[in-house]
Length: 369
Figure 1 (cartoon, rainbow, N blue to C red):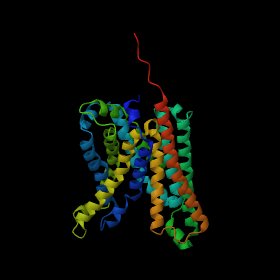
Figure 2 (figure 1 turned 30 degrees about the vertical axis):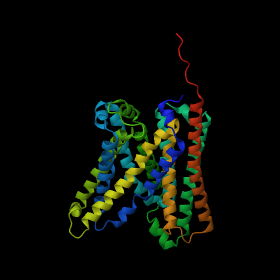
Figure 3 (figure 1 turned 90 degrees about the horizontal axis):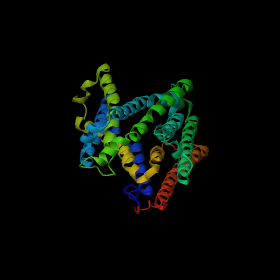
Figure 4 (figure 1 turned 120 degrees about the horizontal axis):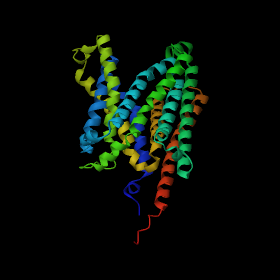
C-alpha cells in the first residue's frame, strides 16, 4: 500500500503546474504597458502591495484555514529564515535591471538566470542535508540531467540574445547597451543571480510550517500546505521592494502620483495590481506543484525558471523582437527552446521514476507478536 504522500504524487501534473507558473512569470509585466503618467516606483509599489501582500494573504486565508495558528506556533528561527530569504530575493530583483544595463539582455539573461536556476535548484537540498538525494538513484540522476539540460538551454538563449545585439546597427547597439561594462556587469550578475535564487531557498526552507499546516486543526490540505510559507517569504520581499519604492517616491517627489488628476488612476491601480497578481501566481504554482512531485520537488525551481525563459522568448518572437536576425541567431534560439522544452519532459520522467520506486517498495511486515 502507498502512504498519503505517495497517493497524491503525480509528476506530470506537477510539471504542468510549474510550467504554468513559468508562463505567469513571463507575462506578468504586460499590464504595466497600460499604466500612464506614473513613475516606475509608483506602479512598482502597487505591484508589490498586491503581488507580495494582498493576493498571497487572500489566497492563504481561503485555502489554509489554520494559517494564523501555523504562524503563531512556528519556530521563530524558521520564520526569520524564510522572511530573510524573501528580503534577499527583493534585493536581487532590484539589481536585476542593473545587470541588464551593463551586460545587455542576452548576456545578462544567460548569466543571471543560469545562476539563479542552478543555485535555486541545487543549494536547498544541500542546506537541508540531502546531498545524497541529488545523485545515485535513477530518478535523482534523471532530475540532475534535466537541470543541466535546462541550464544549457538558458545559455543558448542568452547566446542568441548576444548574437542579436551584435547584428544591430551601431547606433541601435549603443542604444541597447549604452553603458556596457563587462567587469561591472559580471559582478552585478553574480550578485543578482545568487540573491534572486534566495526565493527558492525560502520557499523550500519552510518544511516545519508545512508540517504544522497539515497537523494543526482545522488542517490545510496537502496541495495548499505551502501557503503559510509563501506569505512569510513574500512579506520579506515586500519589506525591501516597498521601502525602496516609497524612498524613491520621496526622493523623486512622485508621491502625488497616486492622486494626480492627469493620470487614469483607476486603470493604473488596476493594471499595476494585476501585474502583481500574475507575478505572484508563479510562486503559488511553485508551492502547489511541489506535493505532486514527491521527493523530486526540488527540481521545480529549474522547471519554473526554464519555463519562464521559454515563454518570454516565445512572446518576444510573437512581438517581432527577433525579426531580421541571422540564421545563426535563430538556430541558437531554436536549439535553446528545444532544450528548455526537453528539460521539462526529463523533469516529469524523473518524477515518474521516483513514483515507481516508491510504489515498488513493499510495506513493512505486520507484527505477529
